[in-house]
Image (cartoon, rainbow over all chains, first blue to last red; front, side):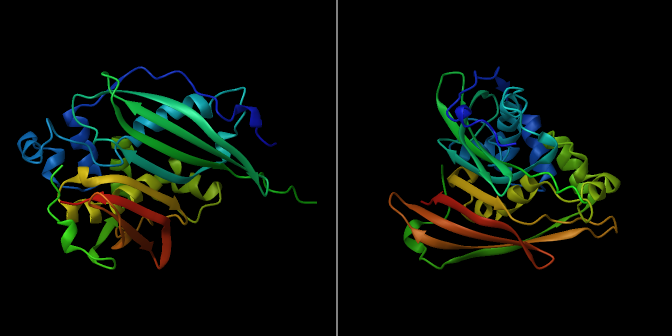
Length: 152
Length: 142
């Protein structure tokens, strides 16, 4: 069933702050096999002009996707998450995420479309630090695939 | 932000050094833990097949994370990346054969923009299939 268009533009309350730890960044960098010292060595990060180690560009997705759970699990919206696949992902950075950040995410439903029985949901997550400075915006497109036709 | 590549030194069409990234089941388990994405399609073959996939597949966000390394290694400072977007077009299938899969990434400067910015277009393939589409980064050079 098509999702309710009246949810377009709906903004959910900001999440409780997520505190970015140096060791969590290290764990993520190791998991993607990236030995860039800016992710693990505070001195190397400082040489590049950063106050502490920074996170790889896609690190913040774990935070914004968890925040998007407010939308995905909204019983009023009624998305069938068991049929959802990740369509597109985009980030626009004001600055890199770094150790010590306390990040809150505000999620907004940007668009709801229906194409060939698939529901397409665009969620924007605005990420701010505890001073209110914008850090990054994440756009996530989720596609809820149409149920298969029931055979005769 | 301290990119090691100068804007003046690149042209439209400049190719970035291409890379090949291996991915095994162990890689996916490690990425699941680090990212918090424990969807069983990324580690449980039986589950993956039951939902219609050929086998366990890599996290799309893992592929996205690998592809941008071509850009961050080139630019030196990962903070040079000011925008990055992809479309997930095909899954990276990761068999449990001790070898796994390869993600092959190439990239080139597609346009020079204002303010020392360039647009880099990325191509990521695995087993001959294009796994990312519309894969673009905007990068601030020195």
